Length: 320
Image 1 (cartoon, rainbow, N blue to C red):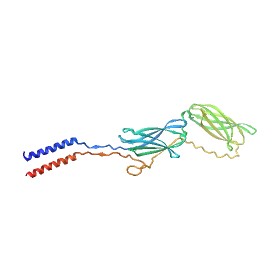
Image 2: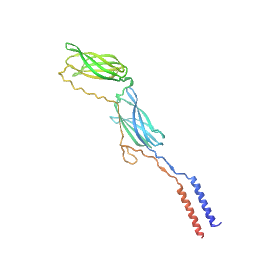
Image 3: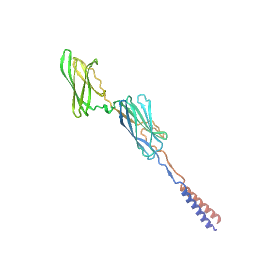
Image 4: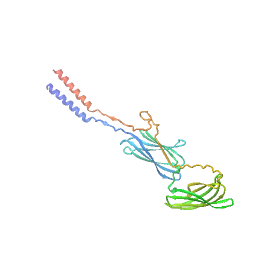
C-alpha cells in the first residue's frame, strides 16, 4: 500500500472517530437561572368574631417560571413586646405560583408585627414587614350598626323647684333596618354622677331620618354630659355624647376628644437582610440561582482532527 493510500485511510479513520464522538458526546446544557422576590403584599379581612379575626395575606411574587426549594415563612410577633407568638411556612410551587394566599387567625386584644420572608435553599432572599393595629375595632356582621348621627337638640319642658325636665332628641340616618335598644343618660359634668337615665326601644328604617327622643329630669344649675348608647342582643354597639349646659356661669371642663380609630395595616420593606453580594439592600432585586453549564463539544473534536492531520503530514515528510 502506497503512502497516499495510508494517509487517506488515516484521515478517514480520524473523521469517523470524530463523527461518532460528536454523536455520543452530550451537547451544551444550559440551566435556566432561578430568581424570586416579593412584589406585593395585601391584607384581606376574612372573618370577624367577638374575640378574634381571620386575615388573609395576598402575596404576589416576582419569580422565574421554574423555582425549586422555595418557601414563604410567616412570623407573628406581639408589636409591644416583640415576642414571637407563632409562625407558619408555605411551600412555593415549582411552577406558576405567582400569587399565594395564606390565612392566619389573630386575637383582637393586641397589636401585631408580621414578617413575611421568602426563603430559597434555606436562605432568606426577600422580606416584607407589616404592622397590624386596632383589630378590636373590627365588628362582626351581626353587631354592625350603620347609622349616622345628624343632629342633637334639647328642649326644657318643665321646671319644678330645683329640678328641670329636658327633652333630648337625637336625629339619625340609618343605612339598614335595625331594632335597637337605646340607653339615654344624663351625667353631671363635675362629679360624673348619673343624674337620670332611660331605656327605650326604637326601629330605625333605611333611607329615613329617625328621631330618638326621651325626657330626662335633672337638678338645675348644673352642666351635664348626655350619652346615648345603642345596644342590640345584649351588646353595646355605639356611644354618642353631647353637652347640656344648664349653668352658663359655671365653667365646663374641657371634654377629651375621642379619636376614632380603625383597623390599620402599615407596610414597609425590611432593610436588614444581607444578600449574596454582602451589601444590604432596602429594595431587593431578583437574585439568580444557577448558571450555564457547558459539556465538551466540537472544540475538542476539532483538536483531535487537527492532531490527526499533523501526524499524517509528519509521517509523509519522513517517507520523503
